[in-house]
Length: 502
Image (tube, rainbow, N blue to C red; front, side, top):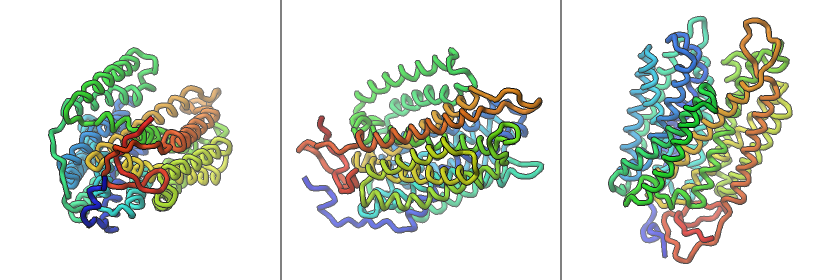
């Protein structure tokens, strides 16, 4: 059976300006995730908040992303990617302006919820690319847009550090920057992104959306707050149990709905399932690097016996920015590798770089050069992973499920990041140095950093296993149907939807 595109000329080209605009939008999204990390202390002091209260500035964004990303990805598939993109960007601009003008913790959290919804922009951007970019150029285009995620996360840390310097730092300036960038992305998308070629229509599975939102909140809330609540507290255990029960109920309901939010056959389809597992592992490793390196280099060596006593700004500019810059460049190489050797092999190569980078950090984090160079190797690993995963998703689902499938993959990476943050934070707090001078806050033992980096390296080792074993091409049945051809793990093209046999 021939592809539907084979019957008519393919008018897709995908101009460079379109790819750059979508890359800008994706970069702004990634900045929303890490923008507040350097200014949490400033927010806490200015608003007179407790540590538990200010932690919701990050938790609210995580939960909002988990709730809205799959829903808006599906909405874009059904009703058009451009109007959905514009709507999400308007919400992000409004949330950024609200955060920049409020001095209320409640309204700041509301603003962060609005910014978190913008995470849906990334899967929507990939849907636009699949519709507008010719197949030969699609891997490179997706790699460029994906590469902006790692770069944006690092750029946000640097920008927030710069804007919060001085004797009287003002966190509002950071959110004004976010508002300006979001407005620029909104205007660029309105001008450069064409109207959708087709809309699948259909009703929105609100029950499925509510169920997915509930189970994600029930799981991610104790993950993000478990360190403060206690991992064995009744509240934490009850929420994990409720998440498990809700997951079972949601799966049963989605299997019986005529037009479900998430097609369970798509969700457990081998390429999609293992790509989401890879996303979870890469997200875990990425946050492990951000948090581990940031805390390590800010530790005063004269007190702890390790660290570099760096300021927040120096930690961002000197130690984290090089990794972000390398990741942006490596994303282009990742796109080339996807075309040349296939997405599966590119993902495995990323895993190898990740193992090398974190092994370096594990064994030698006592010099500035070592930390920077090892971080740059990890940046290459993350970029290769980001370049490969969208290509694997596109190859594994039909065109009309691109948005929701990439939305779920985005959530897998966010969930991995949340787990990474929780695990590393708990590890660093579980064993601290003794005999510290009076007035010095608790400092982790150096062995906890060694363990944290080793765990992140193990995560990348598992990525290699996922790529080489979990994503190995399996024989398809003769009754397979076809959609848009897409790059496979072997560097060739295959139908985007296949019937996988045992």
